[in-house]
Amino acid sequence: MNLSFLSHLECSGCGEKYAHAEIRTFCPICQSPLLCRYDLDAARQNVDRDEITRRKKGMWRWHELLPILNKENQIFLGEGDTPLLSLPHLEKELGLFNLYVKDESSNPTGSFKARGLAAAVSKAKELGIEKVIIPTAGNAGGAMAAYAARAGLRAHIFMPKDTPFANIEESRMAGAEVILVDGLISDAAGMAGEMARAEGWFDVSTFKEPYRVEGKKVMGYELAESFNWQLPDVIIYPTGGGTGLVGMWKAFDELEALGWLENTKRPRMVSVQAAGCAPVVKAFNEGASFCDFWVDAHTIAAGLRVPKSFADHLILEDIYESQGTAIAVSDKSILESQRQLATMEGIFAAPEGAATLAALKELIKQGWVHPEEHIVLFNTGSGLKYIDHK
Amino acid sequence: MSNNILYIEDNPDNMRLVQRALESRGYRLLQAKNGLEGVQTAESEPVDLILLDINLPDIDGYEVARRLRASSKRELASTPIIAVTANALKGDAERALEAGCDVYMSKPINIRELWARVEAFVPTP
Image (tube, rainbow over all chains, first blue to last red; front, side, top):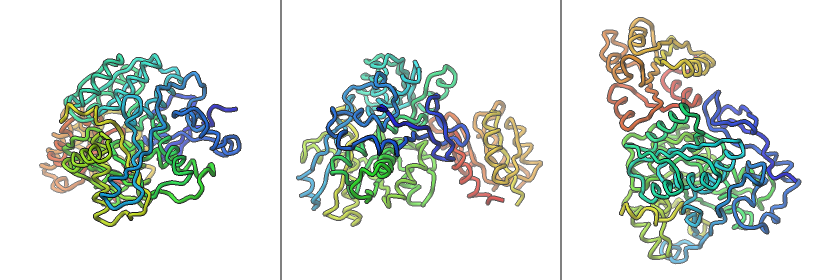
């Protein structure tokens, strides 16, 4: 039995195919992100979705649809299978009947970043890579440091100097070399890229390698499983680099190809950004295929301070295809929603997660969602990691 | 319109990538390896759009943009300039736009985005 049905890597821009056994970053021809492709016909014949449900909990129970070929390379710290919680008090407050939050704060290192970095670091180990580097606005650094420590890899992290203290400390605690940068995540990305090229570090920046998105896509598998192999009507997702949004849409494509969904109705994907950094919202409103670089990005939600994602065209394609939308919310409304989630439902969300509730309230005002629809908010991390910013 | 795109860039790998991408769409690529050569080429050749790397070995891209906008060749005041930079350091985008560039792109250059940006100013031949 195959551990994985990984078949090859494919460029999301020009469609060029690459062998998965080689170390790859992004497409050398058109410089678009590479995506993992699987032999889904073989997987359909050999994998039973209900058997996956009975397996030991965690991200790796989906191993046939993940890119690691040898079990010994799966780095596991408990990631995945986060709870899908109903929000009864907010339902009543907002006049809704089926409102949920996928609470990613229970992942190792307290955020959804654990999923992507578990996959990327595991694959790096499998490919014989010994040192990994990442630019991050916060949680990805802590996650990479933890998984690199577990895998025995060296880790180097570039963070904006206003990154939450918890992220800096957890990264250093796990043995990573941390450089604080006077600038944004894009500044950190430039420096990490230069160091990667100059000293041969493997750059696990968002979408500049093909594997983080594979870990993130499992959120989509878990959602389908939680809704008895159907999909919710609306997914409201905070968008910085966009790996989760793109990953979930990829998961839905794969589930459909596998024939595992009870029906093919897809959710409308809502990309949420902060008003002080909303390149995807601007591009969506203009009907554009790519984002303009957002000048003077600022927001309290560190994970949303991404002036331009490397995968902006994928994010936009998926929103358009899903008949979704993109919406910007103010820092004030993020903070109000963070308090509301905590006081009404007992969930101390990260600001990025709270932004999804702020967006939902706006979408209700616009009549964009209907009261009976199944709506899923994503809380991408724990508010505890941000308390030095209050 | 002559479909001439001038790329001012000292990195030969980037130059080759962009040349392949734009020539495949029927554009003619004029090449300059530094800022002064870029200004000179823009002033001596018909140019419909300029791709401008910011980190150049002589004068930086901001200065190139300022000189192009102030050139005695009057059409350069309105020739579209797309700034391109690898570092994306804080304030780079703002400085590029202030210097007279129309659009800012960060490297690595996504070819599909490049086509879209160029075609927005200069329709595919």
